[in-house]
Amino acid sequence: MPSRLTDAFRAHPVHLHHKHLLDFTSFQELPDSYKWTQLDDHAHCPPGGDSFVAESVPVIDLSDPNALKKIGHACKTWGVFQVTNHGVPSTLLDITEKASMSLFSLPIQQKLKAARLPDGVSGYGVARIASFFSKLMWSEGFTVAGSPLEHFRQLWPQDYSKFCDIIEEYQLEMQKLAARLMWLTLGSLGITREDIKWAGPKSDFKETSAALQFNYYPACPDPDRAMGLAAHTDSTLLTILYQNSTSGLQVLREGTGWVTVPPIPGGLVINVGDLLHILSNGLYPSVLHRAVVNRTKHRLSMAYLYGPPPSVKISPLSKLVGPSQPPLYRPVTWNEYLGTKAKHFNKALSSVRVCAPLNGFVDVNDHNNRVKVG
Ligand SMILES: C=C1C[C@]23C[C@H]1CC[C@H]2[C@@]12CCC[C@@](C)(C(=O)O1)[C@H]2[C@@H]3C(=O)O
Ligand SMILES: O=C(O)CCC(=O)C(=O)O
Ligand SMILES: [Fe+2]
Figure 1 (spheres, protein in one colour):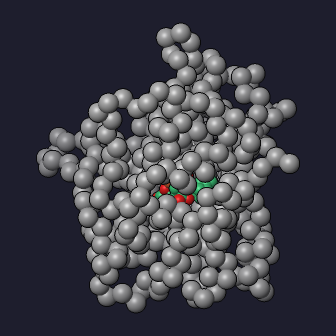
Figure 2: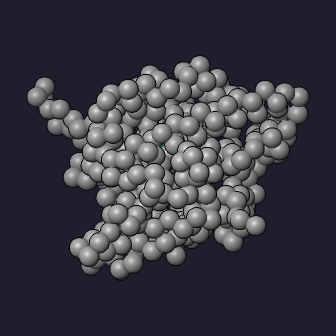
Figure 3: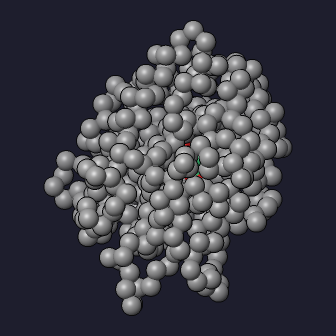
């Protein structure tokens, strides 16, 4: 039987401290267990003065005839961009945001009924990457891989079906947009439909898989010392992220530091993930990003983590390799890669590199909050 996304962590169970998922609103002060250090390494400090124009993440109108070219440029130089006119109804974004707020507003005992199992993908809990850090993150999450039915029944025994309908509609719209973005992105690399067999008979990427991650960041009494979601790259082809009107997402820009991705009404953020990095043989690098928190406002984000069918081998596209551009990565399936990420975290990508990383390679995320990286 082909493996499913839900099998990805069978071999890599993580025992996370769900016991730390407390009622965040009860804290007047930030507990020590949530105080991070060196938050400001790579900080983005724009000098004052009117003439200064801060670099900002590209915003691309998908109805622009030059969208393909602009996407290619954004992927190469930033690894992230925002899209407008993407066709996802704003009412659906609103309704899904409200549904996830109802989820996070449930009493903690209720939410824990749908707790993510140590070897599972779906359910309520802290982010999987929490196991790599000694400090706790100021957030809670809920992951849906496949159908939300089972967990939603536990959360809302009476009206789970209305919530299931919303999520299923959202998954459908995200799947359509992800397929469209895949062709724009691949098209910008000169890749055509014949080059990607796993896109399916209609080249519509219908057989691919995805996870939906809801993140909730409560208002925080000491936002400068807390971390919402630690710096990471996504183990995806691409990620479609909706954020509410509270900013918090930051991306690392080489030579500049952390750059905030401002929420734009109706906009969606697109991240290049590690598998697109591999597929493009490093031409489109995956973006390191994190979420910071706010003193007065809560923040909510919904990430659609999009990948290939879980057992398809992903390797640098043959059109992009040649005698002068040897393949930099070995073939890997999505499930294998998620297992590698579960073990090596931010070193996962270099661990599937064909050659050893160059001397002098600096891991930008290697700061002292990390407890173990295999
Ligand atoms: C399909 C995926 C992708 C996962 C694992 C699994 C389900 C949840 C995703 C996230 C979401 C939050 C950040 C991240 C780093 C995490 O901890 O869980 C992501 C991770 C990855 O991109 O590696
Ligand atoms: O909350 C955010 O803006 C970032 C979320 C994220 O990076 C993720 O879910 O993978
Ligand atoms: Fe992410």
